[in-house]
Image (cartoon, rainbow, N blue to C red):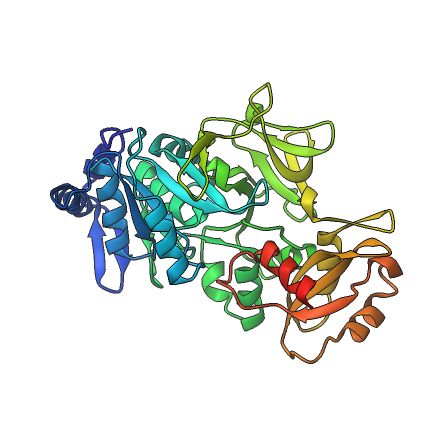
Length: 423
């Protein structure tokens, strides 16, 4: 898709703010002019239509201009994963520096559905479809400002650009009194509550949670603090969320509740209890690191199996965890999320991730990774003692390790499984 469909949005309400940072405010019209100029620069530098343009998508106005300018020039933009080392990013950029028959695409790195690192290839059309439905659900438009609190190489951050584009709303990259909306993953919310930095969150119209399961204790704490909580469910394949709660939703306090579908006919539950999705925001393509593109794996009826376990009660969606997070130990089944919730109930435990490791006798056993206020407070023996009256003995972790510091978003379970195997 060329820029012809999305570019005119920047000419609407041209004096309205689009991007605000420490350097001031960039209006929609000024952004449009900067994007056009950047497109001409890239074309003059040899970035021809269809070529893949690698971009380190740090959330700055320069990144925003280059992202849209490259698309306007007909390039496909490869959003290099910021959590990877610089050398690895250079390798990925070099491997993908070829032309494609489908110009104007956006390549987003993911290790989500399917459990392996790969690229999901979105078009502006899929991201605009997601944005139009999302902004309607959360009331984002002219006069609103969404805080850029997620990196743009994640679909949760990238989707903000398209929401602002189609709705007339703006983006703020710094603390700003105009902020009305913010997206957080549970780890970020937990840190805000622990630090006591909740006053600024109370002033928002919408605090959207997504990206990872929301523990019941954290959900309760957010509601008790008077935060304008909205929960959501989505994945990289769908261009961000496909379900979200409504204003004043009576189910908001219910464990595992993640909202109501944006497109009710495009979300279902399989016979095995797996969430299935379809719809206009679904990416058409995926790719390996060598640049080879293939279609997403869909069933005969066009559904994508997400790997998430859930149920529908009327139009209410509940998601209980990942199918591949199920730990089978001695023939018994343990959802990693169940043990993680119990660990997060312990005083001073800030983050908890549980993975399975192979075990000669039981097949698999759980290993817990924790971030604690006092790093030495929760040894494996103390954890097992504290939880023995709440969980069956076989569900308790065999080991407790320190959770490596990441980007503050979602834990990379593949890395943690490797660390657990190595001891």
